[in-house]
Length: 626
Image (cartoon, rainbow, N blue to C red; front, side):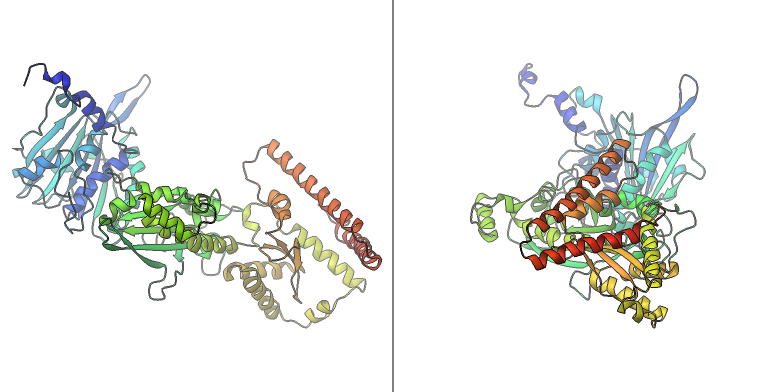
């Protein structure tokens, strides 16, 4: 080779280094996950993550900054050949589909993740005691200077420093050490680990929940684990079905969600699909779904009180567990029991999206079908389906089957997953959202509204006054003979059957009304009618049901009731203007109805109704203190 041949290399060492570093890891936590993957594949049941900090003198004070990060496990360790290959890009013992239930596949994790965060990675691995460890490393400066091979492993005992810090050093294992942390996202040791806690707990929740592995998080200062600073990662389950998790109390020791029925009575909340790989071999993909239990969203359900430190007059979304759920919105994609990503693109812009969870699990044999990337942070094909509107892609007159046939001819990579995606969107998310919306229907007191019962109280006063003046109805007379239990049953049954309110929520609504002696109630629900409200046929209470499917709901009630707590003065003024305009248009619509009523007898009925309604409105409104 000519001495000048280096100038014609396809890839220069400098570009090689840049490619190694710009590997797409979202943050330090995701990079650390690659090392934990290797530990789990090595059959470790204990993985220890150390963040070691040192003092840094600032202008007016001393701060601490992480200088080293280490991951130590008690797995089976590596021999010299495997150790050397583990630091080679595109190699490694996990490469290929050999049927082993390993997380790794691409042979990229150890070097790729390490050099994305630091300029030197060192590895010790042993199969016969840490004193007999083998050692090798990668250094970016040496690679820039033209180093092409991973250094041959040498015998080098695990340093005493790490032996002293470890709780589980065993006869076999591996230690990975990152130094010169020029790309670590956080500064102090505790902060570095704190920012990894929820992610690590979520990625490995299935391993943690079943006890297959423990992950010790240990911040280190002055050569010692910081007193009171270490902890073991707890599962972070976005389906909130696990019992012992990192969810805030009271749901740290009991499930916050319940399985959403998917049609299999033997496995509630489970559904299986058969999807073929590129060779036509079919594999099982499992979908799980869950939604919030009533007690997670509704205060003071009997037997399920909220904690004493729960924020008063705030709904569940403002509580600690609601904030936790807000960080777990989306569909969790699971590969070989390890989470690849939590895809929030499937969620709508509604605060209630936090109250459902969906998990899609698939084997690594379907990596190409799902579009799994080599850093195991994305599944590009599956993610693209969150934004798919197949109806918009149809040619004129084309059926769904013809559309799929066309995709097959084009070799569209989305085709194998389209049926799964449509099922999730239409047969799963749609009914779950409806149930979640109905779960707290009619419960306005926890929403932050200042006077949720004001209209009902005033209406009750007006009804009683009219009764005293002799204006009684047949319902008034019938209700006098009802016991409180009979009234409760009538009203709860109405809310559950007619308006699809969760039974626990319905019971709370009715108990609240009975306690206050209310004779009127207001509820919003979907109704198949052109009327913008209906009157429920009940004896014990006057219940008005506003039609959420009517245009007036979005223009009037939603504008008034669904006001964000951080609304600006300008936004509030705009809302008031919209309500005033809508009310004026409502009266104009009545006036036009009268003008278009040509039958004299019908016109007389309409005018009488307008006059009578005005009279009733005076009785209900004029004495109101609001």
